[in-house]
Length: 130
Image (cartoon, rainbow, N blue to C red; front, side):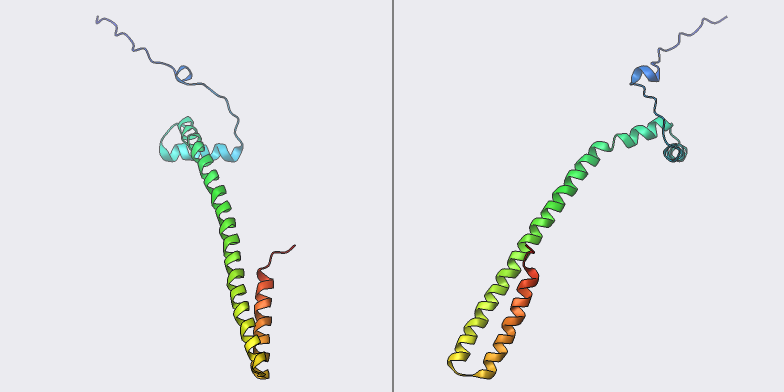
């Protein structure tokens, strides 16, 4: 009779890592089972793989927060640029009104006043509500 082979010392799974008992909701457990079956892996490996992605989710959440802050800053900056452009246009139109008034040209004066009304309406749209 041949001598018995010595068994290799295998470390049980519960000694390799910390064991947790988790009761999952029905929909999540069905999803884990389906993923394990599709991937041909144990259910615990599917759970571990998805849990290992959590640090990246934290980083993505921070990135999303920074992007939203940047959107707000850009919107404020764009609003200031629009108001500055409208102010420049208003100043040009007011100078033209003064020139038309000096020349006693009523037709041009009325056209410029209409343009001032348009510019003021645009400025009021972009003005912050207080």
